[in-house]
Amino acid sequence: MHTFAEKFASDHKVTLPFVVDPDGKLAGLVKADRDLGNSLHIQHTPTIYIVSSKKGAKPYVEVTDTSQLYVMIDAMK
Image (cartoon, rainbow, N blue to C red):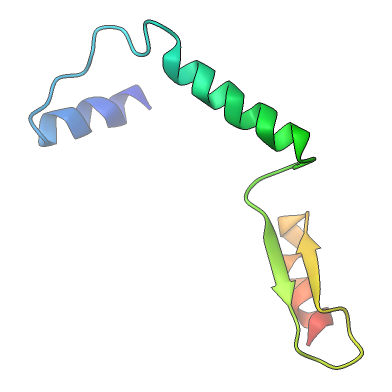
């Protein structure tokens, strides 16, 4: 990750800060987002839904195991 940041900075002719987030402001924002997600009972991101327009079928299902994505798509057809 650090190598990518150095290359990006070099390519865009900007300098990287000596210390990233020295005051913990960004970490605080991330924690606030995580706490919000927890309060809404979000268990994972990204969230993937498969939507169907078939009559009598479930209108959508959430994919919680991405290894089953194509199996679930086929089941919704």
